[in-house]
Length: 385
Image (cartoon, rainbow, N blue to C red):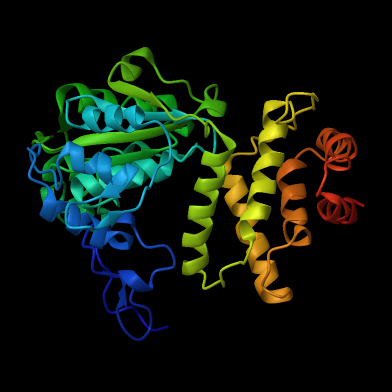
């Protein structure tokens, strides 16, 4: 089997796995990192940014907030919004990273915690890849350091045998590390962060040494409201974080805007044609999700039961993207109710027994009676049969 010629180290920003023939550039990646996908916007912000920057930050806190929230620069460059929500939430998150407190982004599934985390790291450090993915099996080495066992056996413990974690690399380089799904990590592994966040030091007792964080280092963690009981954070660890709660979109219009923007971005990366009049179906998906999530129709007149799933904005994006693919490959390219019906059914009915009853009641009491929704009702009945 051919061996790839070059594999870029995380943070190099140039090449990824080369494959059998040639290096693969970041632009060719199916899902480029934020610092590559929005490199032009970051460069324009850096050029226009004349405000004070914390040590080793690529942009000032004002420019980081502008990058996330969007705006127009003096030279006319339009910065697209990455996060649609209260401005103060972004300002508090950015300000936290400029202090010695770590940042914990908390929220229900689908509130863009990972998305915000990635873009914050990209704007602050120019590198969003210093990432620890939290799972029930995440070992302590993923946060602290590991060893090259071949070299360890041959030469004993030395600095060359040590394999730094993303957190250790961020400490030594003054960059932003990320820990995803912190509450999924076992409690004893979580607590390895306490010394790192309080003392800004990572001891390496095997070598009788320590790694001290340099200015610019900080950490962003994300946690899921629904997973609070999986591995609850200790009070000692929670005190090391400033917690920012990311809410669900406040209005249907805001949620439609978020879904539309992300579907357009995903559609371009997947080479799906733009869907004419697709916003009508996007608005329908958002309406269904919000009503089932809130337990009441948008006019406030009818109470409905809520299913077991979260029906998040992220799931709405997935449903619409799947519908676009159906319309592009098996339809006429126009997003229609039949293209999104199956996706909505899959998102709503997670528990085949209880959720199916909730969905059927919603179809018959709300969707069936709503003006202009007859085609959607028939499509949903067809896939639900």
